[in-house]
Image 1 (cartoon, one colour):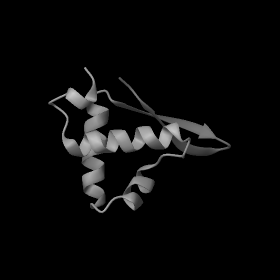
Image 2: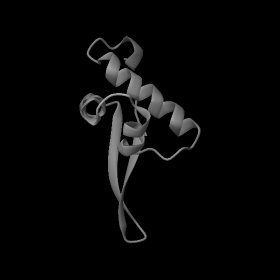
Image 3: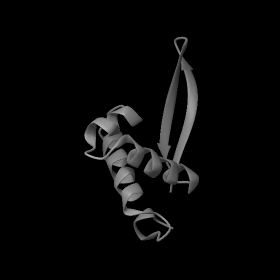
Image 4: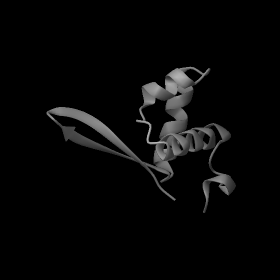
Length: 78
């Protein structure tokens, strides 16, 4: 099912999904902090929408080691 018609996903999470999609298409590095800075909402709103995307299989988060630093890599699914 596409996220746009998935009734189990809130508009908050759908909005985050499409912001992430646009940023990734423009090859802009994605982080939760970047979303916090873009949002007029509190970080908790971003966090809950983010978690909703992960829990429902729309966002994948992987840890990676780059030059001795822990970084997170994100991938949109579906």
